[in-house]
Length: 194
Image (tube, rainbow, N blue to C red):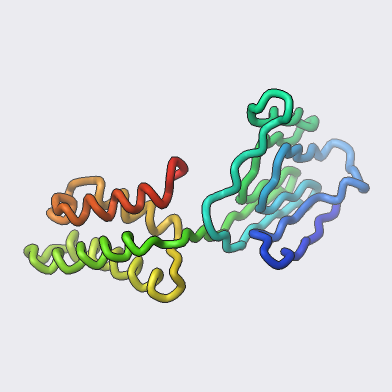
């Protein structure tokens, strides 16, 4: 099978590599996907798939089947292959030399409330006794603030790491009311997919 790169149209979220189904190869398996909203897919002897896209916002909701209103069923797997019901970004590869790499970045529009909460927490951190943990939290907050100031968005993984650090409660920073406000804002931005 051969793979080709489909360049994103203006406004599309990601480039998608798809296997050319017109050239099947016996015994290599394949990939069956019900819904693909971004990412990279490859199948075949020298298969490789790579997604380095930058996606803004939360992933699109999963389309439901018209009859039941429930998510679509996972398509049947191809012999020796992979079956994916819904793929919203990422990378999948199938075959003897399969390789998949997801180096994509998902960014979320940052709310003014998050920026205010981050700045307030940074100010309050300076009132605490210096420690390695406080320095680390301050550095994470500074990176978040700089990213929001620069582009009005923040990387999803950055928010997840910051929330995890503040929810651990292992530092004096986690006990501050302003830390709880940052966690609350991050949780709202990430929604149920956080």
